[in-house]
Image (cartoon, rainbow, N blue to C red; front, side, top):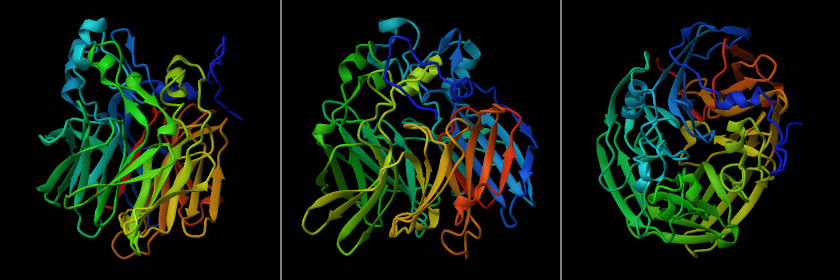
Length: 481
């Protein structure tokens, strides 16, 4: 089995195929891929995905697997056939650096060339639009960890404009929530300073802002995702502390300015969706990349997430996601476990439950149950911390699971995106999962299509690309297009 190891005098070399996750793709692909097996009847629509696609310019290389210019992919499926296209988001950063042939901006894991003086006040960090992509209200929105939202043409992937950030914060986080009942789009942001502020903005289907508000947080930490219910927004303030001094002095990147202290515990900030005073709940310390879903029932909030006892694959001593960019293995000892928070809105009590202690990431539901009572969760699973080799379906009420694992020496598996059989009238959780996979043997990427109710049967079909695609974080499916 492939495994990650602690730092050693002689670093362990990473398998060459796995290092392809941090190897650039040139973009501009547009072709019909081969299909192994048979695509299911009824699977018709478009999968969009986003992740870092470019890691080098002018002799400089990004220092972390999570950093690079956004490469959006479009995989259309109809009548048993598929078509593939990809393109870089034309952010001002990408356009300027493409013309100059060098990196001109710092990014969140890598300082810009020129040393400390060139990176004073953070090095003029600019959005790469390389984390999430949302088909929302007839538009395709690509996002990063801050800055503008970039709007793309749904077919050509040409960058057509931006949705500006609010003046209330330094930019929205990469993740957003879409209420399937009201079609409101919920975005969140954070602002650093003497203290940290949290920001919530809610948009109508017209992308007209309904309301926004912000409040001061009790600690200054890095967050990536959040949760929402019909009535509340929940921020997971895990003990991943941000110290701005080395960052502002130009000596450290943003990620090098983060530290994790599990003993400090996690604070859950729960605020009414319409604004108002937040309430705080204390739970054991862990680190969360991604939330599955939350809902309210009987005076309680039930929030399901994936979290780590420590994010050693991300920050700290020789994290795996940095060492892999050097072709080496690194620390990734702590698995991403499935956890549940139960918060009493009446008593203020909170508890944490570990639902599955295996290694997981990229939780997904049928989008039609978001903010409501979800029965099923889908996860990438297996492998090592932060990277996975299989797909799991979990009944969130009974704990029953189904699992298919390709093997960590064979395939790296990304987020399983849910595609409904019928988005308007079909049964909840009836549909397919589509996961992007990097294959060791061929050193190319394929998209695996699973029956969402029979994950253990393995993929029904594989849509095989003629090339590799670097690590791709998040995707979304639409039956339109």
